[in-house]
Length: 222
Image (cartoon, rainbow, N blue to C red; front, side, top):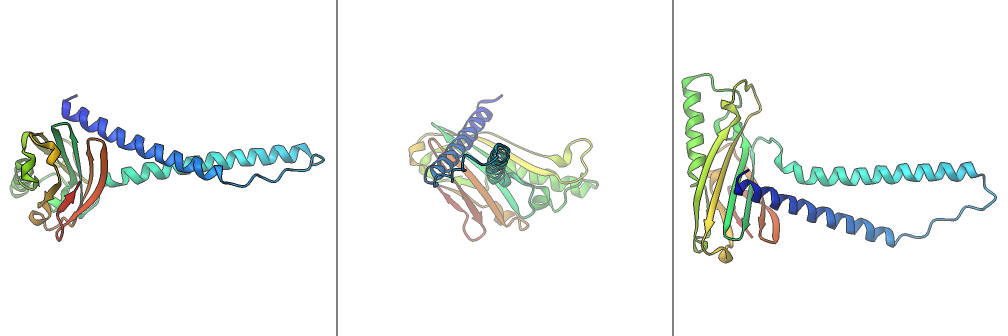
């Protein structure tokens, strides 16, 4: 596993952990303010108490499951394969940063099947080259960030691919003045008419957040 991959995995794991802790705190806090349950008279049948206990246990288990399911969906929904949208992750740890982009192939080349003609082959290769240049994103210049590694790939060129493919682009950057980081500008939407918005999730050292870049507003502030 590369350093940039480890950095991304650690940062996103931290993001999930912080979100789960906040959710657990809110859930616990709300229970502390609930009124005490009505006490059953001692002459009631024991089997009725047992039935209520089992019912409450089942309800609590279902409630907990629903909370977990909602929280997982809330985070992973950003990574869904959506036409017109892209997902970008930005992570800065110390003076090293990474940028990871994922988007449906339809948003880039207008189709998602394996290229079947010479023209489609050229379109795919041209898109891969464009993504790998990294000219479609820029951090504020006084941060002094320079691209150290860059690569792009697509499901469309994988053996046996049929449909619902994505494009990917990954960058590792070295920043000389990371404390001056203020924003990220995205111009990918101007280059890809089928792309309407870029959902951005970011982690900058001990801070994290989300934002959306559009044709009208392509700047994400940290």
